[in-house]
Image (cartoon, rainbow, N blue to C red; front, side, top):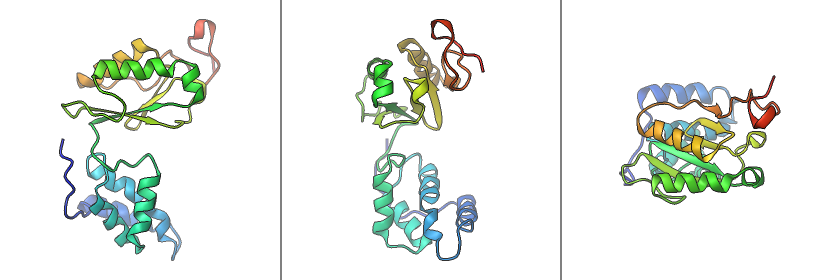
Length: 194
């Protein structure tokens, strides 16, 4: 995995167009409010992480001091300031997930992938990151992989998700028990009628 900081960064032509579309959504004089979506766009363009040059580029586009963009990029856990794997696994570590078996989910990920939280597999495929609440507490335990949420997890369902990703298959996102949205669980914790 290449973690070298590039000397420069510019939006690709299609992303430059997208950046302009984002900026015009904000009132004149308030373009700095486009900071989060532009940093996200830069991160997506750069393989899931934000190099310093990309943060500076966004600051220049928005005509704000670079330190402001660095403050935002370093504050939000959605931004990765160093390379991550193709699949970024974010494990919720707050109370609802912990009470519903989050420790078992974390241990399963670490054991199956052979890395600890904060690490990336040698092939660059997976990175594990511990995060605060993912906001799906009713469907705990939860993990987010890239943009998808996986809910109502068990060690077995986590192993299947990881195996599918490693094999190039896209696992079904959402509840792994068949629950409909965040409806109350039916008998034996299965399903839930909406």
